[in-house]
Image (cartoon, rainbow, N blue to C red; front, top):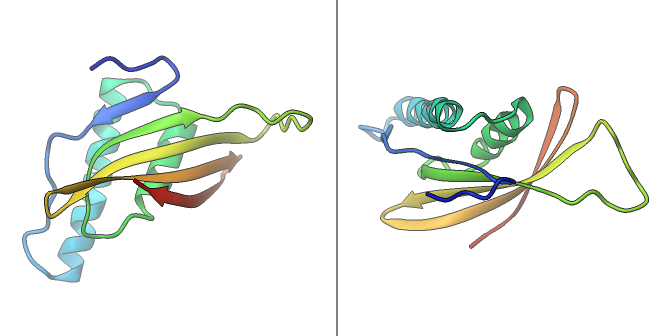
Length: 124
């Protein structure tokens, strides 16, 4: 897989699909999927603390029934005129599937210190 330098990407090959309709099991499966994805991301490529925080926060906004397959962190160009040195601004794209249908969920992520703001932008 050829990945541009400015993009952090990973592929999740294992599944943490729920084995029942029990909400506790579903929630555990989602957490398992997020942790598995982050663990694989750390081994596949060195993601920054900011990238991992944005991916985790964005994944938490996804519907509970989706399976995360891949995610990308796309840097945003710095706005002209305003240069906030302590703001970290990226777009997070998460490829997720449900019932065999794959969609890409897109989120705006802004971090400042310990505060992370996630804004859903849409899906394609």
